[in-house]
Image 1 (cartoon, rainbow, N blue to C red):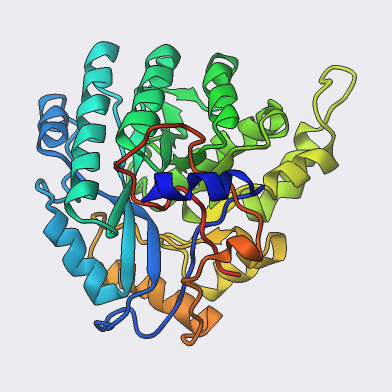
Image 2 (cartoon, rainbow, N blue to C red; image 1 turned 180 degrees about the vertical axis):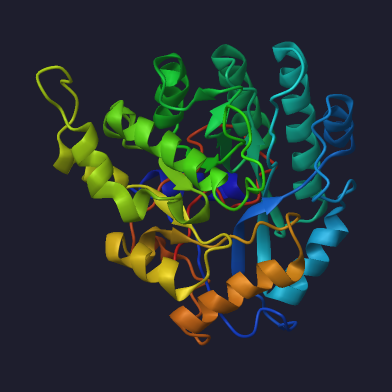
Length: 356
């Protein structure tokens, strides 16, 4: 469906992802309207890959089916979920093995999308930090499989987004006007005893990557990408001015100014995953506006009560009667998700939808 929209969307200028709140998220709705941009899956091959390399997580189910996602979606008022993998990504084995696994994951996700028309899309897995392999996989996933964008981990094998080696990938994603979904990974270095990485470390990982993308000038040089930060952007919305002032140009650092960096940070999109509470949302809206906030659940991670608590918090904050599952293209600028050609199996959600 996405390729039918491409000609229309290509004429527009910016992208939007939907945050729609309508009714109690724990009750089944006749016409679910939410689009979940942060929804994880496993393929059998990927689960085996994690087990082989000791990367399997005890807090995740070892088997995933489309039916398990659909059951949660139907119970939670979610019409469509955009699939992606979660921590630890493709950080194990040789780089060639990671490339093979990325291809398998993307083909598997595309098959799920085709089998359940309108219910799923996917963000393509890329085998970073291998930039050349990631460029090739992005082209295949976007042009042949019809991916709705790409997923990049904040760091892959301790190499962060925004480091100079990753610039060719961002230049290409910018050329394609791609949707770029940034997901945190495990922090490099030893774990802190007694501290769950999901409590604090993932927020720091996102903040590190976002900061480097801005201070390196990537966000300024590549304005045509639509970049989504997970979990309300970590600390970015709340510490943007401090980050910018601490990183501002000087005689020794001829980078962007503090004001320019804050402006670049405000260009990010911020998903609501596990962030549905008045404290986070008030701070987020003090930094950005609802047109930059996207809906996400983190399905497959944790338990449904944890995910539903966040969604209930969104409903309480924004109002349960809000229903924005509409094409905002005419009132908001939009772009295509990929800018590629020939994609025949995409979900139709390569455009971004937000609360408007």
